[in-house]
Length: 100
Image (cartoon, rainbow, N blue to C red; front, side, top):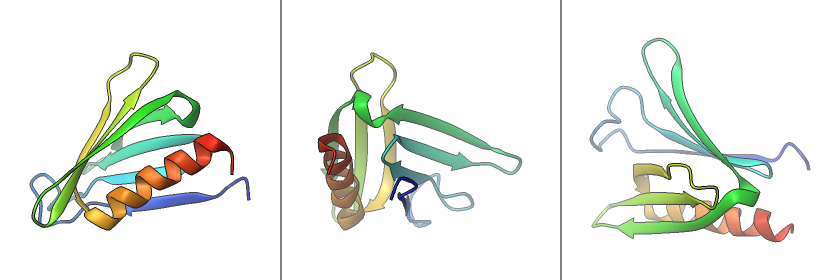
């Protein structure tokens, strides 16, 4: 399935996500953080082959995700995701990097 893509949306109950919650999209080619705006969106992405590490910081209810690049670009940061979603994002990235 070459067009396999998974989407994870942050909770509206967390800061900065009330009107336009952040989405993380994971596919075989890339990891993207999409922040919708009133007009358009801001999108950051890292190719799967360039992901160096995934750091998950969990709180009482929500998790923060930091995806670092081996290319030296800025990391992808996102907060307000469910803990299970954060772990699933990490697992998908590892699975796609291993090629399975």
